[in-house]
Length: 356
Image 1 (tube, rainbow, N blue to C red):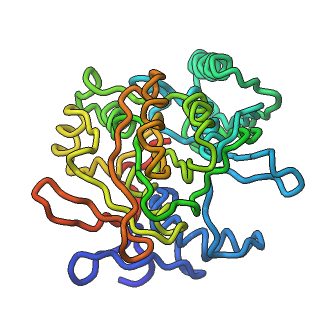
Image 2: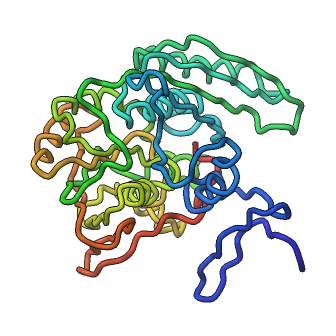
């Protein structure tokens, strides 16, 4: 059989080769997963088409060329199902965009919202999602100032897609970047991991975890604002969404050219999430989150950063999970419970498609 398959085929040793990106190749679900396939798609097609030089840090949001105090981001949300334990596509769109601004040290100022609605979606369901979106924006103190709505025919979309764009202003003293982690930095995590992805999957597939696991979706800008007294000792921030904590750490290690070491014993994986991942063969490190952040801070600021984060509900369970150590640049290693070191790779593609 010739041609490109729908998924990469494992080669010797079970390792999947890079996906082909030539004229005879096709887009895979994994290209949107935030892992190696996403990076290949960006480097080979997206960035060259836009005239963006390859090799620079891939940030959650960008400063405006003529006003570096202003930060902008845009994001598309295609989660299935539209409603899941702990949230829905509406509040997820607001929180995800606010959080991308916050990871660049920015206070959100305003949002725009674009809707792609499939013909046949019940108006009651649309009203519920929009009410949730509006309530989330109001609760975060961020107005929705513009938008657009398009309707496509039956079967031409999956019920509802939302694209949000956010503009923010840099918080004085903060300038975190994925390329700014440094030797000796402490790696902090603001809360437990794995709940969002497993909650969405459980609902989608009817797996019965719904009563135990709810999404952690929430805005994180207040948590970041609280870190502002630490100033330039806050080096890098990232919310581990697609690809989970594994992707976030690998991206920072790559862009900062450092080795990151994390401790398995310190990772906050709720028992219900660990059980669900074990049953489904998932790695909690690669499961998407929507309400926690990972912070690289100077070692002498770690205790104060933890104290500040723990003073808010969204950071109440903040912990130190690792450090920047000497080693090959761009590598992430896990100090396991038995004392061995295991390399944590950037995920190839998508464990759980349509999560955000």
